[in-house]
Length: 222
Image (cartoon, rainbow, N blue to C red):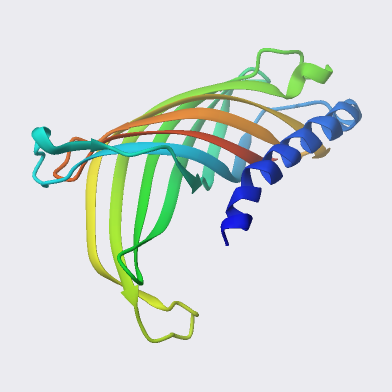
């Protein structure tokens, strides 16, 4: 298991490099026309850390900042073009997920996510090789969730742990990033993106969180 975890960053870096190399040829085959709606998903890896109040109830005297931890970063988005080939407004869900063992067999699971309204700017000529490049920034409500799980009897879905404690706390999140995509076909694009995400929670358990996601992307334009 430890070996597999250590391989994750290398595999993602390899995939990002592969996407970049493929883009150099594929982008010339189809221009980046953006003039309607877009639906997209992303998945990858990110390092994140967060600060918590060890005593609960926002006890500043016992504020603890974690180390940088590895986590999965699933993302979803839907958008509409405001200015053809130049500017898009999107509604996005961005997550950072991390799970690790505690005590003997129990686990703790942390999920920090943000729902954002974001602007995506495409600075280059859509008919050039640079047309797949874009910049993004957005903000919106955030949620930090922590759950403690203990072993349980397997169920039909294969889950062998059950939640014995759950806490959700709300706040505000922000992100900025950049990416590159190439057209697989005229209306479907694949690529890679990196971003910085910050959440301000200020709850009884969570204070704030930051992460650096690196993802592979798939977008459908229509």
